[in-house]
Every structure is written in C-alpha cells, then in structure tokens.
Length: 403
Image (cartoon, rainbow, N blue to C red; front, side):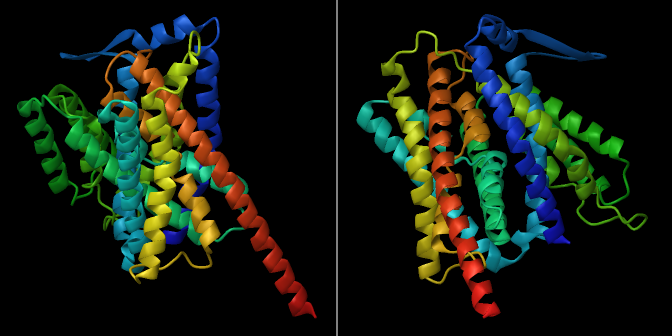
C-alpha cells in the first residue's frame, strides 16, 4: 500500500515538472518582453482580502509566498508524516542512507557558498539558498531519462528530498522569522492544540479547512513564516482511518490538495519568482559573487555532499545502496539534488527581502537558475548513460539466457 502511494506521488510530481518548466520559461520571456513593466508592477500590486472584520493587505508576490506556498508546505508536512508512519521512512534501513546523504547535501553546499562568497567578497547571508532540492523538477528529469532505472532510486530521491525539505523548513523557522508577535502566535498554537485533540474524533473536511485558515491568518499576524505552522498543522492530521469510515483524513487531504499544489501553486510561484530581466544586465552582474556562490553551491556542493556522504555511509556499513542501483546511477541522482529551483528561490526571497526586481533578487534568480540548469543537464547525461548501460546489461543477460 505504501509503495502504491509512493509511486502515485512520483507520477504526479514528475508530471508537474513540465508545467513548472513552462511557468519558469514563461516568466523569463515575459520579464524580457514589452510586458516586462506590467509583469513587475503586477507582482508589486497590493490586494486586500476581507472577511467580515478580518482584513489582510499584501502584494501579489507576498500572497503567493505566504499564502499559496503555505499550502505547499502543508503537503510537505503531510508527506513527511505519512512516509515516517506508513511509507518508506518507516523502515530504518531504508531511512538511514537518504537521511545521511541529505545531511551531507545540506552541509557541503553551505560551506561551498561561504567559501566562494568569502573569496569573491559576496554576502554571507545567502548560504541557506543552495541547500534545497526541488522535488518536482528533480523527479521530472529522472522520469525523462531514467525509465529503465531501478524504482528504488526514485524512492531514494523522494526520501532524500523530503528530509531536505524538512531541513529547509527548520532553517526558515530559525533564520527568517524575526520580530514575532507572540499573542497571535500563541493563539495559532492554541488552535493547533485544539484540533490535535478534536482530530481523534471524526471531523468533516470543512472543519480542517477552517482550522488551517485560522492558523494561517494568525501566523501572518504574528510575523512568523507560515511554512512552519503549515507543517505543524499537517502533523496533527490523523493518518489512520476513522472507525466510521475506511478513509484516512491525511491521505484524503494529500489526494485532494496534491494536484492543486503540483499544477497550480508551484507553477504560479515559479512564474512569480523566476522572472528576471536581462535588460542592462552586464557580464559583471551575471558573474557577481552572489550568483557564482549560489550556482556553485548547488552544482558542486550538492553532488559532493550527497554522493560523498552516501559513499562513505555505505563503506562504513551505516546504510545500504538502493536495491539494484549502481554507483553511477547514485551519482546521477546526487546531481539531480542540485536542482534547487522552487525552494531555493523561496529561501532567496527570505534571505534578501525587498523588491522582486532588486539587484539581490536578480542575482539570486540568476544563481539558482544557473546552478539548477547545470545540475539538471549533467544529471540527464549521467542518468541517460546509466540507463543505456542498464538496458545493454539486460539485453546481454536475456541473450545469454536464450542460448
């Protein structure tokens, strides 16, 4: 049952990669077209939502970042809980290698960034940007070039990316949630506690929606990143079916929300954050210290951190390679982890707050896009070679069996 759920998740995430790519490409085209001014003006435009006495005013960019992306983090939290309790992460042996590899994939990129930024005189606060892995884009590339590769590699990549996302969420909470207003935050925690108790009983989906909306609103008022409370709310959603029904509230929520997140929320975020105007862009800015530090952190740091720690863990007996996978295949997956697009852009917005067309935001986008493209292209080449080698071995084996 867990395997069926995982493969369904992979299929949806891989399929959404094409939509993500189109949205990112569309953002780049629009940002460099006659509609460029309208695009950036739209992102900066302020819009209010009012329900009775409750009113919030945010820019389109902030509505996407703090509003729609909260739903993304809710899905991440649901995935983490399900995998830990019912899925691949419930097996300690399967859990060890991707967790260790994910830790390496978070530590080394940060060190590479700091080393490059220190050498070139770049800002140090951007070190968390290359730590993240974009699940959808990574799985999309894998699906395109690795059809004959072991399914265990897909599970390894998904597990690693989930742990990676958890680490990124923790960093967001620790580093980018200053100036917290405690009264609304305590109220949000109170709502979570109440729903944790009520969740033991059968509750209609509408009540969960209202509970999440209340927690989100209070979190915005508190000044805390909505990502943290979204994950916290996900962790109280029951994973086991209620006695009165065979349906699991957690699986129902994932099933209902996942397509919207994969095909609407993430592409819209990509469209809002990937747009960078190349008008007046000099060669000096294209290779600015911030750009180079992020790109090398993703491309060099990720592959060294993930593959290096995975290799060391296997040699020390701390974990096992994915079943049926070779080192070349594992290296290709390690390269895929350098695709940090969505989450890296999100952290970049938090690390360098300001206008979407500010110098820092442009350089963040250039670095993330450059590092992700390098990682994706290199991974596609390596995995294609590994896929071809796997097919050749299977062909030779079938010929030998026939003889």
